[in-house]
Length: 443
Ligand SMILES: Cc1cc2nc3c(=O)[nH]c(=O)nc-3n(C[C@H](O)[C@H](O)[C@H](O)COP(=O)(O)OP(=O)(O)OC[C@H]3O[C@@H](n4cnc5c(N)ncnc54)[C@H](O)[C@@H]3O)c2cc1C
Image 1 (spheres, rainbow, N blue to C red):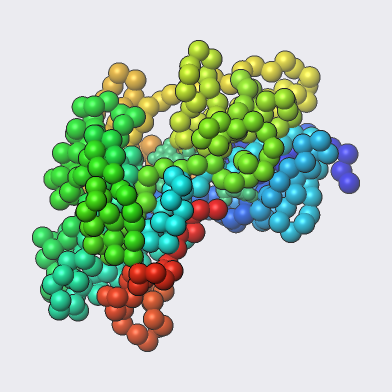
Image 2 (tube, rainbow, N blue to C red):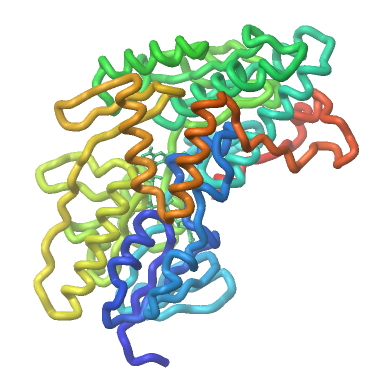
């Protein structure tokens, strides 16, 4: 057993990976544990779901990111729990990892707000499996609609409901509408762009509530221009095999996408530490779990309340990235017995894209929408992507799509009734009372 101090990092997402990279060359052994073998750039997941990017463009093996860091090893596995007294992490394999410092950065999962049974009829957007499943469902719906002769069934096949008017819902609704109207409709003889219906449902009376009201209004206008039907101030009361029930009305749909929120992964509950009402881990000004200065919790899992504020920092990539870097600096300081300095978040603003040449950006007092916002959005996402190859791939795909109006990643590898069968319209949604394709998110 190495005599060097041990740092265990649970999660190779934005927070965990930045903590590991910040400890490159430090006099510690680092172990990153992740249940996936890849780091995922979640902000572009919706583009995989709508055939704009291939999965490989937004994911990179964790090993390849830290492969040249001699003090870092990667373990593919799920952390089941932590013994805070013995300072050990237990993995699903039964193995244990001893730590001197622990960084818990395991992120969030889809939140169905107590309606977990809806998960069998809707797909969240949290990992590549979700995105690929959405992509295949949309593409198969078009294939089935092309062959369908019954009007009502055809209408249902070409109706897509997105629940949640935050950035993910806005991006998904805009991208599905754009895919259907500007790319797919052209290629099918019997489908016209006016046949396609994309409905975005939001409980609040405006979209993108963290943004200023004028930007919310701009986003709504831009979505309407793309043909998206907005149901603002309306509540989803049920999701079934037939579609979504909104304000008591059943909207028959071939696909219901759940973009309504996230909650910390269940590991948070198994830590045995103080949680907030939302289930996030309470941390102090040094991102350390209350009463456990050697255990940091960062990113989406943690509730970090800045000094003088009442609300915790939002679940955003820059929060996780900055906290990851901060934790690395703090551990380096601990090694030299330096006093800890509190974490200070530098807020550079928020942005959401709506479609081709459409976006909204809010940074301090500066706001913009439309083409300029879209270019800013694209630039920031390219800069934050991990890996040169991924940046080049994404840039190329975007330029190609911009010039040709085509989407290159339209593969369907999973046919509902076997590889020789044509998709039946009825195979796209499970029969009432049966279990259909489920999202892999709620874990
Ligand atoms: C669809 C979508 C769009 C988004 N768009 C934006 C955006 O435009 N801008 C923005 O700033 N933010 C966006 N976000 C939020 C952003 O992605 C998160 O805030 C960020 O990923 C949080 O980083 P993290 O390190 O806390 O968690 P993550 O990046 O989610 O990483 C957590 C890691 O932990 C692993 N893990 C989980 N449980 C375990 C376990 N028990 N054992 C081992 N490993 C485990 C996971 O596999 C994962 O790799 C978006 C999120 C989603 C889902």
